[in-house]
Amino acid sequence: MSSVSLIFGIFWLTSGDKPDVVLTYDILVDGSRSGSMTRKVSRLSDNETQFTTHANSTVRYLFLTFRYQFNGSEIWSNDKIKSLHGDCNDDGTRHHVRFTSTSGSSTLIRNRQQTVLGTLPWTTGGCRPPPGEGTYLTLDPDTGVMRQTRFSKGNPETYLLVGESIRGHAWETDLPGNVRFFFDDTGKLLRQSWHEQGKRVEIRLASLSEN
Image (cartoon, rainbow, N blue to C red; front, side, top):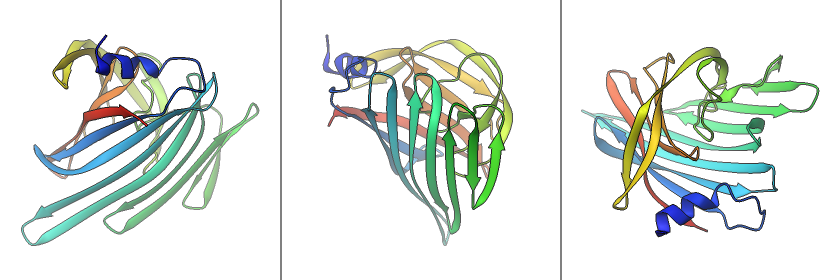
């Protein structure tokens, strides 16, 4: 087994003593690298996994410079979101998002405004793949925006990482900007793309390692 396959396999081992896995992504705008995103995956217990994400991007256009920064964390219990926090600075516009779920209810705090939810959302940060084809409530960890989103699963594709082909599927959505996710067969985000302000933005997995 190659080192890439071994590290990918670590994600779904049930022991809480397994090492963290760190995924590093390139952020591309119209094909040019503008920043990076790192995601640490930590197994808290047999049922709970924490995803800690940091992203920074800088885009220069003519005499203008646009900056984006995000720091957040999600805890998933099996296939359900348990808690989330996200702090985003989108070129000076700040968002603070907090989400918690208990057996009785779920609460979202978005920029100090609290909302009680009747159903668990799927978060669009790509920590876990969608539950399947259909329409689901989604939550943007950057802004706290919720909406009903339609998902459809594409044909199998392959992704090349460190010289090795990894099989996965694309997920099409009707999110603004034609957001598209690409997960491998064990549920790891390999690529995400969308269009924003006339530009194509892509998050692409560049490397992964144990920590």
